[in-house]
Image (cartoon, rainbow, N blue to C red; front, side, top):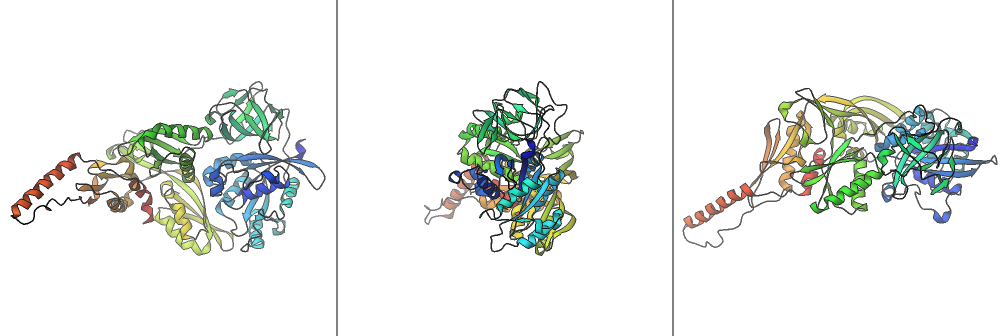
Length: 599
């Protein structure tokens, strides 16, 4: 039976037409009737449709009668398209035997295309190259086909040219899957090993694991074990995606489907885990599992303090579906009670922020994102610090290590100089360059993650008119000369405005921030001093001038001493006010930290 199964995925850069091609395949195979068809069927979240990015992986089974007259079972495993979700992509690739590499005929090869292609080659998948969007007036299909053929080895004539939107030549893709992708090895008689390549939480069935059965078989009567988390459970049902969930009696080796576990949290059934049977367990789990670590941290606070418990409930529910989101309570003197949340990257953070605001109707304030530093204290202890406010005093710190990333930028050669300028300004180190295609250059750099998370992507896009693309991987922790930059308002340190900066940037960034805050912080009835403090001294200061009530309005004429007496009285009152006065800091001030690198 497994000779007629084909498991494949579609890999592409963001917005190259992956979801549209998936739609056409579902229509062509009759998996979804034309009446039920909507654009981007597999992207179930509104956010996915708006941003044109697949955020969650999903799977669907299609029946297809090939030209050889035989019926085939095609399992499409849809992968997330953004670099933040690289681990999910790697798990989805391991669940397949083949990959359709989609390249936009107008854009050509992009950074993510390469990153995903290399992952697919590492996973030993059969690559089927496809050029999409050939119907567009600006398409260069033959030129891009040459580039793709040169990249993966082969003949440009063998690269399929399609238009997923119009359905042109899409049938050839299905035939190529049947011909080129190898059938899975059916090892039904071995102990069960099934790879969990995604999971989501369902309020009726608990955690639903999306699985590819590698060896053995699984049915709803078996008691199963999650090998990484050591959780034993009797499934509620097993089934396939067609494209809705459809229960079946058993999933055999080579098949793709789901196991509804009834578990209450995604933490117990993590992506990349291996499912085995308790009665006859496998000797070892499938390779490649690890725990995805948050890279970017930010404070999440309710705008209205009364919504604190609602925010906690919202984060709890989001975590049911997304095990890579972490959060812990934190308190800020400036903003009150909130949470310190960890995200896979900036895009992941943006998605979570929008989901909190839309799905739970909460107004939230996110503080400037920071990264996790390793701090070695003078006593020799190493501590992890993800909030600048937690950094120990200067005298107790012997060294600070910060995370560095490998980044890969693919761009038309015209923008070579401006990208070099952008990266070197942000402490980046140039490594090497390659030319994957004529007029396109791939630049490899090493750069601190802290420089990457604040507006780097926006600036890269604006400097290259949107043509450059970016991919990044964690490299290592490196020791550097870093220090804490604190902002004092009216002599009070504002923890949410603190940042960890490089020694040579402290003065410049401190001055910039003070200049911005001077315009943002509203005038009070007394003078407010704003100071930037770093390295044991004040490096910049500005005063927000007091609002003055015209106390001399009723003094028309008369002796000057009367006026002086009134002004003196006003001065004393202001001094007293300053001692007890509380300065309200608007939300824009916290965002000002983010915008520093624009200058």
